[in-house]
Image (cartoon, rainbow, N blue to C red; front, side, top):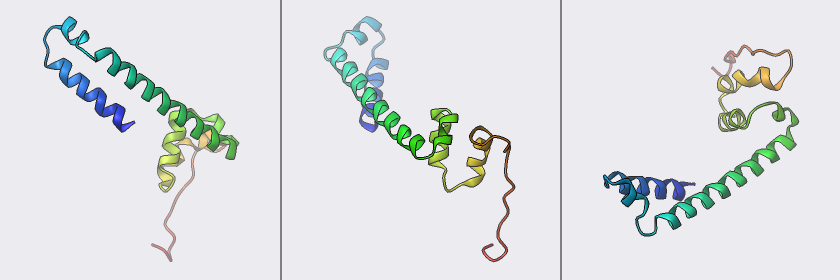
Length: 106
């Protein structure tokens, strides 16, 4: 993904330096660069969807949340307060949980 992002930024920087849109769009190699970026993004998206599907199979309640929410949950797994906002989507009858620090662990 980082390679595709860098290629897109380079392409947009080059386009912004050219005030004529037709020239910017028809520059040599532009079509190939765009096709390459598109293929890379599609590959990344497919891999991400496969990863999320694996997570949903391991914990079927994840099927009840959108992929963006699931990404947020997985990326903030060590931050219970951040994950708590999705509890209502995952579990029926649970709106939130109260968190407090353990007296012996601070």
